[in-house]
Image (cartoon, rainbow, N blue to C red; front, side, top):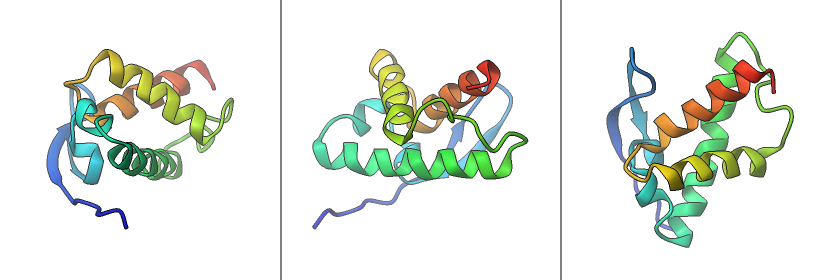
Length: 103
């Protein structure tokens, strides 16, 4: 059984706003990518976070040009380039990029 660790922290998603992040989102990218269990937990977190952004945003179809694993792959690629960033900040950057590009 995978033990899920809960974490809560204030995270910055962009340059102007801080929010409470619960779970893997509050962790660094390096922490998310460290083990198979943490990668699995992070993937699930990204799916839920992305769905929440789509539900609460003005465009409920951001990410429609790909699928769940494709979205996670984009977040992971940026996380690998910026391992000290938080997962939430990185996922949000990818979300904003895809939204801006209409994908």
